Image (cartoon, rainbow, N blue to C red):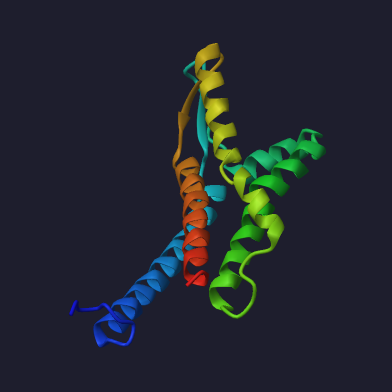
Length: 169
């Protein structure tokens, strides 16, 4: 007779109970660090632009939005706020709610379609850095904000996937 072969055995129950506890810990850690990383990602500088070795700018995502707004580019500022701040925050809140309220349906159907665009902002900033470096207009150097923002997107996806694993059991 093989140990852990039947679901009634104590070892089998202990194994699955330990896995569920570990899964809960991983979900909690990924969601907490996702929220912290998101906060740091939107407030810390994303990129440093150096022009002519004398002028330097290190804007955060919030400063970029405010700069667009003050320059009269309200439509672009609103789009950046919607897709870079509000959408990731809304997604994070839905995942947090699913983690806390295990009885509810974990995710709305539309969230899985929009989740594919989670890393779009990180890609856009990377393209801006690449464009600035290759054009010779400015030297662009990635700053901690972009790494925290990317970490928030990745940890949010990891948390959502772990929740899907937990709910499928």
